[in-house]
Structures are given as C-alpha cells and as structure tokens.
Length: 308
Image 1 (cartoon, rainbow, N blue to C red):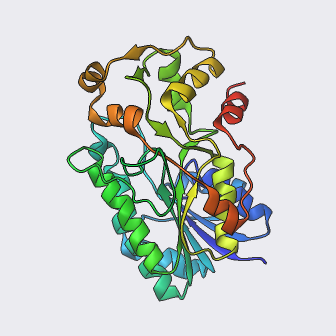
Image 2: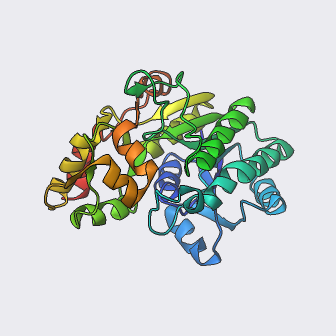
C-alpha cells in the first residue's frame, strides 16, 4: 500500500528516524524544513524536501497542496538550546505556537487539499494527572500544571489532541524520546553529576526509543488510525531506578541526592514535580490496536545500547 505522506518537520530528531522508515516501506515522502540548507539532508533520508514555515498559513497551504498527500504527519517542534525546566514557558514558546497555530494551519491545509488523515505528535513522558496510580492509560487526562511554567505547553498539547481527534486523526503521545541526537542534553549533565535524584526519586517517567516511536507512527499512518495512543516502552519507572542506571551506562558516578527544597531553589518547581510526582504511561492500546512491536521494550536495553 504505497502512500504519499507529507511529514511536517522532517529534519528534527523524530523526522530523521521517521522519513527513512516511511521510504523503506515504499511510501512517497515529502518532508519539510525551515532551512534551505537542510534540503539535501531530506533527500538523503529518502524524501522530497520543501522549505515551509509552519507558522505561516500560506506557506503551509502551498506546501501541502503541491505535495498532494494521502496523509499528513505533524512533527513540528522547535525544542532547542539548553534545557530550562524553570522557564519552560520560554523554552517551549515556539513549540507551543507550532502545536497551536501550526496544527490549525496543517488541518486547514488538509481540508483544502482533501487530505483525510492526519497523525500528530503529542507527549506522555511524566505528565499524567497527579492523582491515583503511577501509570496512566489514554483514558486518564494529562496534567495541565496550572500555575507553573509548564502550563502553556500543556495547554498547547491539549489543543493538538482536541483538534486532531475531532478531525478524525490520530494523536501519538510519545514518551521521553531517546536515541541518536535526542539524549545528549541529558547524558552530559548526568556525567557531570549535575542531574540529581530529587527527594526519594519517586516520580515516574515513560521512555521510548526514537526508532520505536517512528515505527508506531508508520503504523498509525498506514492503518489510518484514529484517537489517542500512548507510544511508550514497557517499563515506566521512577527516577530512583532509571537515573542511576543511565549514569552507569554513561560511565558516570552515581547521581547525588538532594532534598526537594534545595532542588526547588536550584531548578524550580517543575523539576521537583517531574522527579517526585511524575506519572508514567501504559502502551497496551497501541500494541493491541496498531499491532505495534517494540525493538527496545525497556529503557534498560536502550540505554545500554545507545551508550555502549
């Protein structure tokens, strides 16, 4: 079943793993970049490259119309620079616009071009609602973190999910992505012992390798999936487990442990919440409905291989 697939955001860490998988399965891929200098990279990955500004409705409309796709995949983000949990509203400012304005532009372009199916990126790393159990399904709401710097980003994620599902598309809640190009900003501070265990390290995180996230996306496109899916590995785990393991894989000393009040002063409220109250996610629906099989069922295997 060869399809014409339009990947908005083809040169990000996800796009670079997704485009080759789509091309390998025989699909004709058009992928976007904001930089003319990256058109050659898209060609190497197996796509026809196009320069597009995801925040410009005319640019999006023209790119989609020219590609005449059967499906659109929304992978547009702008998460760059040093991680800043204290000021997540600033760190994610452009990404939040891409998840609101950019999503609306893509859906409008899809409707105008007669594209019936859209698959969009969402997030399910540690942001499940902070009540009840530690592992959440698609039936559980995401936490909006009202009153924190994360709130604008969580509102933007909710927008993506609401409008894409309403349009009959699929929303893929990727866990914390790791793999080529996606883990360096974490490993460096771990090696420098600048990423401590906060409090008891009780907050859960769900991880997913980039290649597994990409394979789930391919399945969602090919099956014209609808609704919300948690795209995470089989082992949601508290920081007290995954962080020392990551440090060992990276050849670093065991992370230090700091009290919550110290971490709040140094890194802000969201770092404390993530590391002590975060909720992980269950992938049963994606396995059942998409037939998704993971190459890296656990971050233990993935961390070992990535950092070998």
